[in-house]
Amino acid sequence: MINMRATLLLLFLLCSPCTLNAFSGNDVLKAGENITGTTSFLASASKKFILGFFSPQSRPNDSYLGIWYNTSQFPGSQLTLVWVANRNRPVGSNNNGVFQIAQDGNLVVTDSSGETYWSSELGNSSSTNMTVKLMDSGNLMLLQYDQTGKTTTMY
Image (tube, rainbow, N blue to C red):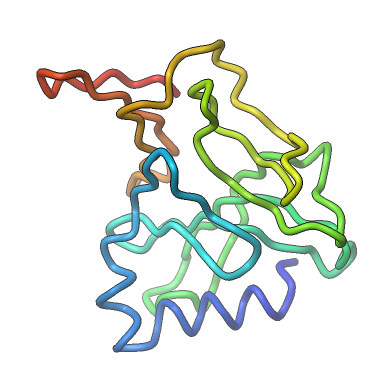
């Protein structure tokens, strides 16, 4: 179960008319940007999938990065957790979780002090021109663009 605080925040973000317009294009995370704690999220273009941090009711002091599927026609009303990045190593209650593209080009979940809890472990490359996109299929893609505009899927 997703904790009540995260659920209420998701409902507010997805249902509020003034927030929905600003939130609607937020399916991309660029190098240098991050998702932190339970206050920021990515949503696929159709809002069918949402990526963010949560704490299960059974472990309220642990924080995980997950992707939820919205199973209802009403945004945010019925969310099903479909993927968890750091399921084997939660971020503890003393630190906020941070999801970002690391300088070595990997997707990472760290805490506020920089300790890594999960990594995509793709090997080293540059984070320059990298973008994370949450697709309408629920896939989380790491894309790299070259100078010509050609896109390479890294993850």
